[in-house]
Image (cartoon, rainbow, N blue to C red; front, side):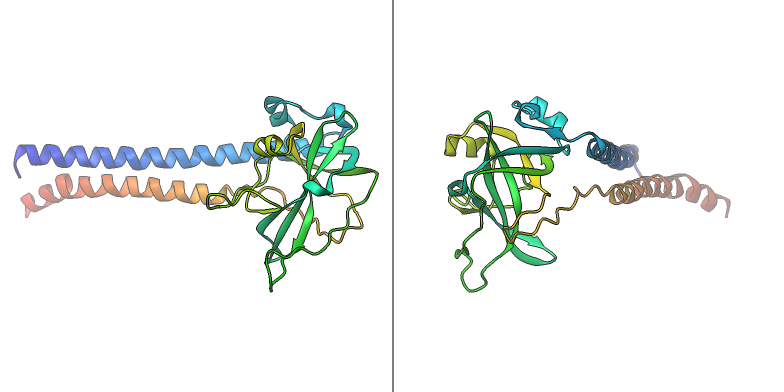
Length: 239
């Protein structure tokens, strides 16, 4: 093999080893980030619930610190502004997440993910009447920065049935002074909705598995180079 081919092979080996090692480190970093998130969720879930509108964040930076906190608020529902998020499953059944703004005592509004309801299998756009209490109500739940987004085509995020809901865009659309938080309701209510909200999935094991695969591939690249370029030629020269 000519000198430039040997140099090219060495360069490819080093490049492949560095790349796979870097990918392994990146997976370990992702695992560490998710472990930190899991710890934050557990700590915030044990803190004293935020009570009342005055305790809730009004800005995005402050909302980050209240993510996953428990909260208790009072206000009045705006049923005309109810939104149904499509293609949301519970126990493997397709249906809707039902979200309704709650006007708080100070005039601001908090979007509440009230619960889940099944879809009409004959007509997915047909919505059964929704029971919404009138007057002042008190709602308890867990705060979140928003609802997990699903893929949607252009124009799918308008109307009473939509695929996703962006709080900032909805505030502009509705004209409400909407807070940058979403409340996942956990308190009982006579509205026929289910509220079995799982905690955010923090699966770190897959990242450790990916990291092992990348490091193993890095080791294999180096081992093959050492075998074919160093050990095997020496062994062949002695026989």
